[in-house]
Amino acid sequence: EAGAILSDLAPALKGAPRGESQINVFVDPDGKYRRAPLFIRYEGRNYPNLGFMSACDRLGLDAGRAEFSPGKVIIDGKLGIPVDDNAALLVNYPDRWERSFKHVSYFDILKSYSEALSGRKPHLDLGMFKGKTCFIGLTATGTADLRANPLEETYPMVGLQASIFNSVLQEKFITRAGRLANVLLALAIFAVSLLLCFKFSPLKAFLGILGFSAAYFIFAAGIFIAFGIWVDLFIPEWLMFTTYASVTFYRFFSENRRRQLLEKELDIARTIQKSFLPEEIKEFSGISISTFLEPAKFVAGDLFDILPLDEKRLGVLIGDVSGKGVPASLIMAQTLSLFRVFARQDFNCSDTLMRLNSELYGKFAGRFVTCLYMIIDTEAKRVRVASAGHGPLLVYKKKDNSIIEADIAIDVPLGIMEGVEYKDTEFGLDKADKLFVFTDGLTEARNLDSQEFGVENIKKIIGQNAGLLPQALSESLKKGVYKFSYRCPQHDDITLIVLGAT
Image 1 (cartoon, one colour):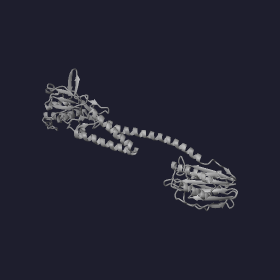
Image 2 (cartoon, one colour):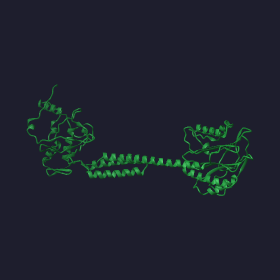
Image 3 (cartoon, helix red, strand yellow):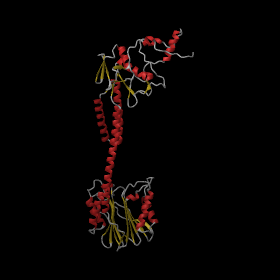
Image 4 (cartoon, helix red, strand yellow):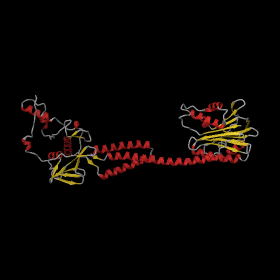
């Protein structure tokens, strides 16, 4: 059956209105429709909201008899309705549109009515509307009266009026927590957020804030469902994460500032430590000398000294303090200072190490110093050496073009045991021979495969460059270890001393 069914208000309805009302609503900052004014004043009259007036009529109350007080409107002296500062009601939507009120097509109603008039069986039982309150409005997709509410993005505004009617009829209202309560709640949330952010590391604080946020959401939802009380949700949640971001940035910049100050102090410490090392000596009575020290951090725990004892004798010390960084550098400075006192008293190598051990024993809580001390006598062409846990000493012999590890007695490191007796070893040094001593930072340098540089690689480089002077040989060894450990961080201090008899 083609054609249109048009309808006007029945004359009985036109002549019997119960009153005039309005359907105004407020839009919140997020674009949601949550509030509707109970009354709009226009030309000296108060016009009640449509859903509200319909509910009052159903309850037998006079919507025009309203008493206004802070946070509440009392209707006809019997019904109290909570409102906000603008006398607006927070709309208590019972559910999403499809799951809330029964709704039918207005076209189907007219069609069913037409079918009943013509004697046909209507496909809708119009008796369902008897005794019911009906709201008529636009609900089809694409029509103008669809807006966003807290439950869905497109909600028919006729449903808002029905929700107000239902809320008033059942006296199920949403009460917004007062401004003072929300402020106190926000302050408490801010205090807890600060505590979490300052008490824990950034990662743990972030996880704590996430948990706190979830707990607050559950709390807000719980009191809303159980008591119909609406506490602010957005501002407290925003406050939590803003507090975390602010504290994290503050800690970052504070830490960065502290690091800058620490780096400045460490630069000063590095300069002071360098002053403890000997002035560069490239030649001494027929001995060419090359030294190199590269800290793994700002300051080193490695130590060395080149000390002329007289016109023909040269003292050479190399050592390694256990550990790295500032504590090791302080022990290094103390060890060097004591060594220079004892070495100048014309002790032999073993006596010097015994006196050093005696002074250092018990001074370092669990730390120790490995040390090798040798005296080169350029007139007698002899080398005397003693070791406190430090080795090897490599010797390049020119006459047979060989590299050997000197047979030295390696005893207990300094500072571990009291009364240790160290032993001297002596061997000859011929023209063009070379001596190599180094710390374990050179041999234990690692590559990307976690392989160590090792003594054999050192011997190989020495063998390939044996004819070079100590300075060039030292450079070859440095290039070799840097190439080997390319793109790997230096994990230990590296010290190298090369001496050549000319």
